[in-house]
Amino acid sequence: GEDVEQSLFLSVREGDSSVINCTYTDSSSTYLYWYKQEPGAGLQLLTYIFSNMDMKQDQRLTVLLNKKDKHLSLRIADTQTGDSAIYFCAESGPRVDSNYQLIWGAGTKLIIKP
Amino acid sequence: DSGVTQTPKHLITATGQRVTLRCSPRSGDLSVYWYQQSLDQGLQFLIHYYNGEERAKGNILERFSAQQFPDLHSELNLSSLELGDSALYFCASSVDPQGEAFFGQGTRLTVV
Image (cartoon, rainbow over all chains, first blue to last red; front, side):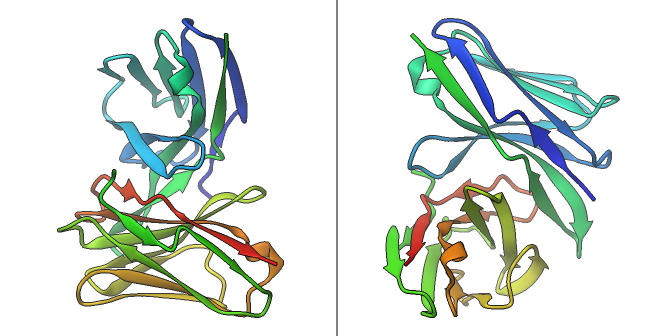
């Protein structure tokens, strides 16, 4: 079945770049998403990329998509303490009754070291 | 603030009981999704409603049910609760099934 995989933890120094990686299996995915979950909060959509794009940049965030390898990454430049959160990768999964479900990774906890 | 409201924020109940979680989607959003987030299972899709009709089911137990009302708010009913049902339950809404989903703050359910 469809699967999305991420590393569970990533530790970076404040000011460095963070790169969170994700692999997926469904080659028919239309959209790929990055969501952020801060402690005690709900999930917030950070950014998404359409499957026919290679890259998308939005301020400190850069999303890279390698469709051939089914690999998605999120780069956060100049990582700040406020970036501490769990980052979820998700793909729009198989079409079921004309609707898309999101298939979620387990989330990567980003830990910022001073 | 995502515009999606979930109540209650916290719920503590005993095994065997039944609870109802409520979700008010963003104004104009027709799609409502329910997710369960637990430490061991991660984020699991439960069910999706679109304009009052069930559209997709995920890993939802038979003890759980949901519905979406004419005013588009949704309720998730959890019955015969077990300790393992303790989790964060999220509701999300979107304009249409392919649209960006906005999440509520979640209801933390603790079964004791």
